[in-house]
Length: 163
Image (cartoon, rainbow, N blue to C red; front, side, top):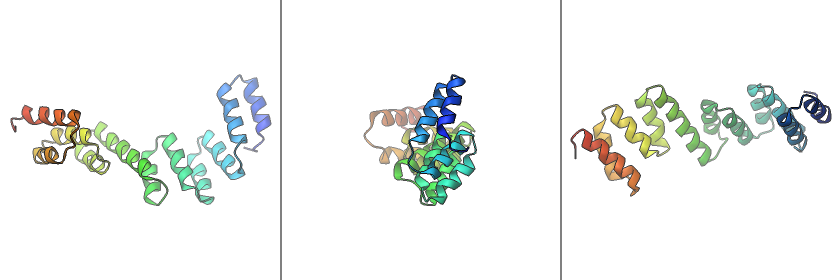
């Protein structure tokens, strides 16, 4: 926490912690002491503190990256909504939130996220599980020419006798 990376590297070496040595070297090579403080906070699992440091230095992109690394997709989504990410990060966050609700069996909630990130395969699965065959039929017209998606759609629609 004192940002003495030489001492940290020696301590990790005494403990034979190779990942710790690599961490100390990586953080020492950062050019900004605030970034170093944030990474050390993240190492000690004080993610809120690390995020606030990144916000303080106006680096929401690094805060988004931090939350992605620790798998806190709700926070990733919040940070992106407040202007801290790009389209790829938004799509990944939406997909992960959809998966979260899908795994919980909350398929209607999952469809909200999967439709926003255009994950057609997961949408097909959600619509099928919720017996929402009207939206499943709409996907046929909007579906890309991807044979995997079209095969899934055909399989699901045939199983209920719609085509």
